[in-house]
Image (cartoon, rainbow, N blue to C red; front, side):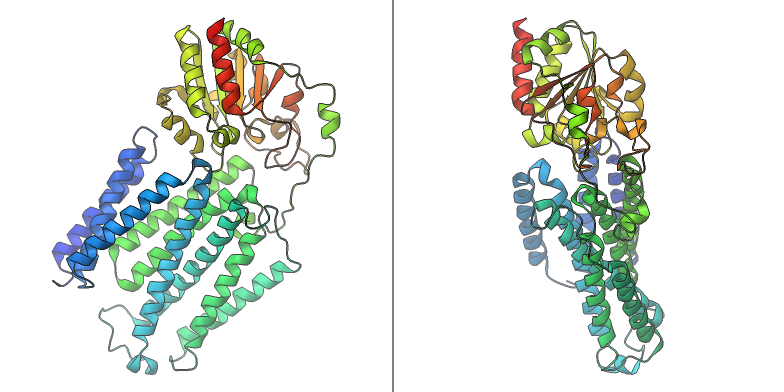
Length: 483
């Protein structure tokens, strides 16, 4: 069954686009995130089906076979991927999006430039769009898509431990990157200004290869701690590649959806850079001017003789005498899968009239919203979660702040030490050091991603509960109930 891209089809595209927009709006709040995800998925499903039918690509049977197969793969990925591995999954999705753009674009380039197109004829074009514009969209989609795919694969490899976590700084990398950009620029000029023939069509392949190498070079020079920011940027790139592909195909939904993803990704990347005290230019240009952080040489001086270990029984007594408690979750909670026991502890505290809030840093964990997802999974009420700007003024009134597996996001050096050599100087943090008593649940004094010591662990009002976050929270719950 085939039919032309009629008014009805365009209206369906518009409906699908509205559903995707409403879905993205729903993702702005934990309360509506699940509903938003479902709405956006329905919009995309409608778009895929109508596109395949309208263009007569394949029959109905094949469409549903593909939907069922994809759904099975998605369910397997969703159920087998741990929450700590979510950044790797997102990197994979970004990469596949970029690869899809490259494949579609390459197919269009080959088909549109077969036969008569080699003489630069535009007779075979099925739209009124100028040939030069279509060719520009082709090259743009190929460039961004290739960078996205190969950059995402490097990001995945770093997060998965397949490549070194530290930045791999190749000598002369910036000159090499400029050289690659020149190849891409000159190849694009040739294709856009000269009649396409059997010889200069190979400049397209030069663009693909150079952009692939550029994607690897840009990402490999960035450390693993900054990979979440890189993934957010690559997510934006995948959207831009999709938008360029939409221009090439004359597909309004791809243009709208790709533009939304591209804009949202750039905004999120900017917010993450601000939250992590990173330069957006460094992320764009592969760590231009950045250096890898080294472990604080004064760590022993900061900690020696000042760190006070505690026990679950002692902390339980402190909690029993508290009226306001703030829980600050971090990556250690995600690794230990301690969200359920932390929820049980919070509920036990509230049952005795103690006010409990969860202070959420925007980049606690490996991705924005990481802690929100974990706590929602454990049925922590949304009203108990407060953002950093709301939490910081409350710490002075907080009797006990419990830091669960967090490090850099509570390091007071961020606002108490403006040394240029301090990698987190100026980074917005949860100011837990201002609470009356701080309990830090951590397995050791090892540094966080910034690789520097944390004076909070040695503060006069801090007690260290050295244990796995899940084990520690379960012990705390037992001790608190036994009082």
